[in-house]
Length: 326
Image (tube, rainbow, N blue to C red; front, side):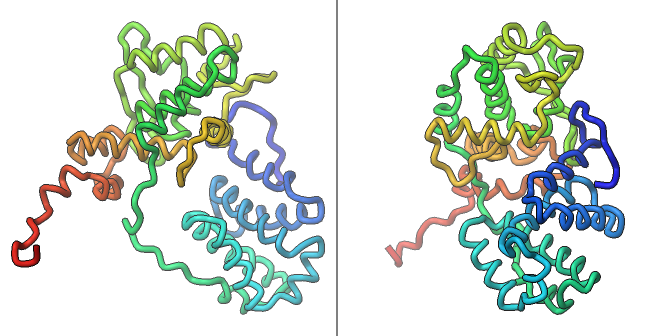
């Protein structure tokens, strides 16, 4: 990046640090390309920091596909080569990653063609993905998998106690990883027995009762293991200088814990707990509007996808099988 950012606690405004990290993690021969592409996305296309991070993650994979001489390979690249890369990528990645790659690859090829590094016709060679709203079913964890994950975390270490507290929040309240990262000590009312999460992605703040199990997990981490620093964020890195955990760090920790617990699920991430939370409420007969409110959605349509797992309502809608066809 052309702008230097000093180290400090994570916050949404500092996401450019993570964009810069995508550049430094890449092989040396690709860094100048990614840095120029990142600057172009920000300055010429006006993309926000989070969007730039996603585009860089996808383009890093494409540059790895091109190899150590990306400029020479780009000059030789054909529409068939673009299609071959995309087909290989689809075999190992889900629909969300494919959509992200599609957007990133089109932008990168447009960026490269503007500099005459490749033919402008390659932009049109990126395959079109047809995406239909509400076409997928939410991929959450089962109740047994959630319980297994919670039981498997060791609680006598700092990272173990911290990760168990994070898992408890995700499983009990269905909050997003960003809301966990932003949770402050002042958001927890220990005497009043409630906890509040800040609004995220345009959603509403959420206030929940502090359950006994969540209170115990949080209390163990805060009282026994949390570093004594001036920062008000609840979850901190275990190493000096004890900066707040970023959403990415939370994802890495949770994915690792699920893998170590032997949880075999299509989606092993913090968001899988959010799906499990919504599914559990709907199957218990809670109205979709109430579920949307508990998830922090401002609009009911944002939670409409969970109607597919609302078995209580679906059974009421199902018609009896005609006797003539039995």
